[in-house]
Length: 237
Image 1 (cartoon, one colour):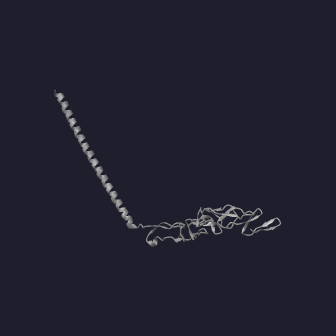
Image 2 (cartoon, rainbow, N blue to C red):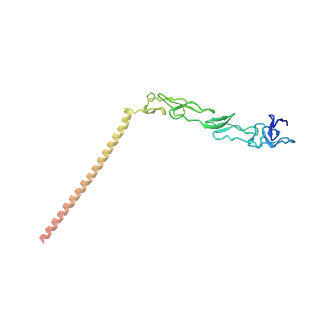
Image 3 (cartoon, rainbow, N blue to C red):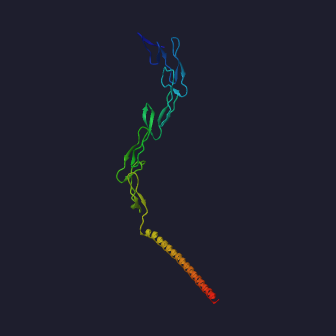
């Protein structure tokens, strides 16, 4: 245990730490001070417990707690008694606070919006970069380049909805005259069937009404004849 005293100042060498008027020997990495030195005894050291560390020669009585890699981070190198944990961004995140070789904080990569394409994919150290589509192109936000709108006519289809910067053109089958005929003819036949059925029903109803009217007239004539016969009979009496 060496020290240099100049007046009232006590200067310890690089492998020692000062306690009062004593220069004590530092504990090695992975160890903490259990008891400081005295004029008669050296420093007593004790290993750091699990979950704690000291990565430098030191005169500390407590070890540092290990860092937990959370909030968008994952373990790159686990914590030991002689070194702290080293964290790095998880997939889809990038580091916004890098200290030495460990990431302290991370953010999620920005998502491009419909109408934009990914001009630069995000990395562990940089965010995603987006650019706008131009001209007759589109992107839903996940493409690495804008795609040209589909030309419906070139595929034998007709355009139902034009494309824009965030969506492709919508195409559908063409409707020519033959298709219209296929639709119109069955409708005409159906209408004719309805008319024929309606006419048949009306004819049957009229026929039944005539038959009913005939029976009523016959009953009326018979009743009149019976009444006249009855009256004549009374007169002859």
